Each structure stands twice: as C-alpha cells, then as structure tokens.
Amino acid sequence: MQPTTSQLLQRLSESATIAMARKARELKAQGVDVISLSLGEPDFDTPAAMKQAGIDAIEANETHYTPVPGTPRIREAIVHKFQRDNGLAYAMDEVVVSTGAKQSLANVVLSLVDPGDEVILPAPYWVSYEEIVKVAGGIPVVLPTSIDDDYKIQPQALEAAITPKTRLVMYSSPCNPSGSVYTEEETAALAAVLLRHDRVVTISDEIYELINFTEKHASMAAQPGMWERTVTVNGVSKGFAMTGWRLGYIGAPKWIAAACTKIQGQFTSAPSSITQAAAAAALEADPSAVAAPMVEAFRRRRSLMVDGLSKVPGFQVNQPMGAFYVFPDVSALFGKSHAGGVVKDANDLSFYLLEQAQVASVSGAAFGTPECIRLSYAAADDVLEEAIRRIAQACALLH
Image (cartoon, rainbow, N blue to C red; front, side, top):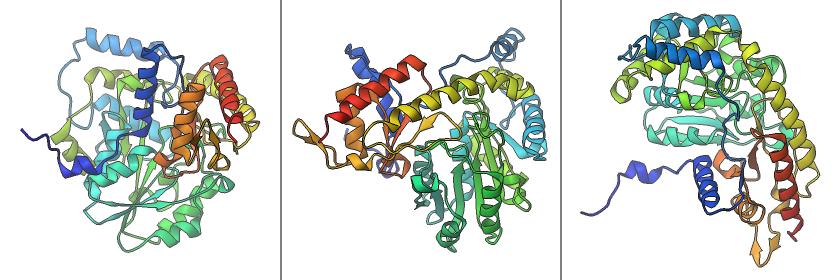
C-alpha cells in the first residue's frame, strides 16, 4: 500500500513546542544533561483539594458519560466563576466544557470559519492558532508587533487589518509566548475598533488569567457591547497546575455555544467525568488563594530570568507582566557563527542553544515573531540560573 496521507495533514505543521520537547527528551535519554525550557507547563503539582475531588468522584462511581457540554455541577461552577472573577453573565447553556482549552479553541474556529475566511492573529500568537485556522480552511492574517510595543497590537493596526473577509480575531492575555498583558484601557481601545465590524467575532484566550503580575485581569467580553461578539476561553491547566487533567471551557453567546456542542459531540463528547469533578472543585475555590504560591514563585523567577538574560550580549529582554515566559528579541545574533556554523535565524539559534548549551527553547518563528525565542521559567531557581549561565557561555562563542 502507498503510504499517503490527506492534503489537510500535509498542510499542517507539527507543534514547535512539542517537537522541541521531544528532541530534548531524546537527548536526555541518551544521557545528555538537557535543561528543557520549551514546554508551557507549571512545575507544581495539582493542589490536594482538586486531587481529592477526583478521587471522591471515582469512589462515588462518577465514571459514566456526561452531557456533551459538561455536567451541571461544572457548568454552574463556570457560570459562577465568570460572574465572580470577570463580571460576565453567562447561562449554563452558554458554557461548553472541553478536553483542554486547545479543543475549546478548535471547536469555535470550526464552528465559525468557512474556507476563505480571514482570521487575524496578533503576533506573537500561540503556536496552534495558525494550524487550527488552517484545519478550518481559513486564512491566517498575521498582525506583527515588536518588543518596542511590548508585543501588543495597536488599535490603528487592527483597524487596518480588518477586511470584509475577516471572521475572527484570536488573541491571548496574558499572552503565550510573550507574557504581555492588555490593560483595561488597551482592551477598551481594541473593543472600540471591533465594535465597528459586525461580522467579526473575537476569541479572547484567558488561560493564563491567574498568572498575572498586574493584579488586574481585563476580559474583552466585559467591554460594553462586546459580550455578544466575544468567546471567552479559559481552563484549569495553568492557574491550577492541572495540565494532565485536560479541561478547558468557553463562555459564549448561546448560538456559538450550541454550535461548539454540536462539533464536540461528533469528535470527543465530554471530557472525563473525573476531570470534570476535580475541575469543578478548582473553580469553586478561591482562585487567588490557590494560585498565590505559584504566582509568587513565578514573579521571583521572572526577575531572575529578565535580569540574567538582559546581560547576555545580543538578547533584548522586556518585562513580561503575566504567564511564565520570557520572549527576548535575539535578532542581533543573526549572522554570527561558531565552529563554521552560522546562526541565520531564530530556528538556528534554538538548535544552537540545544546543541551547544544543552538548553531547549522554542523559536519565535513558531509564534509568528521570527526575531525572538521563547524560554519558559516554569522550573526551579537553580535550574534557571544554570540555564542562563549556559546560554551566556554559548552566546559568547558567537562572532
């Protein structure tokens, strides 16, 4: 048999973060002392109360199919969470629970985007945004930013990018990969543009909401007039250290929620019933109390990374205000060489750091910003200090 795959599969790229993590694991298996700063996963364990809720669900035999959009308990918890934390009023039938926020995003895009529709992606954007748009047959329209703007789009640039074919705008705040956080004023300014375009729906990815060093989170759907044209995406992976539990969710106008339920019903149905019970316990808890220890650790590590990498020649580093990444502009190193090899771009630099320094990062090209690399600081302080030392040593060899 001829080993042929679909044209759709051939159009897709492998997730760069997953690819680099796999490469790092392969080197570790060979005995190489690799420091992996490539994956976006908190290095904390799920809090005891959430684990116990999952155990209790198993012992109570909550092991059967649930409604496709989620159990009544978790949807009620999400409705309460949106009201409590974001000032957003959703009914239970305007909430859909999925197997991770990635599926939530895919459900929305597949429900709303037709082939030829344009989807604006402010860069840097999370790696899967572009590929999900491609699955739906949409056209990704990359809207570049720079470190000088703190990697945030400006209202006039957004206005200029919108055309009659624009169907969606997808962005995250706090942002993966830059750590940038849109303020209330900045969110309002973008909303003023979006309100002028009735066909455009905004996907506001708020998965890093709880890892926010500004102490205030701004939800796009809370802006006047934006609730009706915004899908709010969130989940428990980052703020509650529940990555392996796999649960994300949306709040959206009823017609969009119903569309996502229909899509999901044909792919996966509901997430694990055990996960739903544990996630409900997380969302019913005081979020600031649960996330506070992580946020303090990440704040300290952020300072360590920013201070350390700022001293590496060729690294231009800003101060991220959320998430757990630094996203330095490293374009000053392009064209430099070592031992006959030339660093032509961020891809080359990422592999150079992996081979020379045994530090795994991710090229900014995967996020639509090819002058940067992404480094996660979801690791212990001494590990980060050693990573910085290795990076500085490796970069000093480039001339």
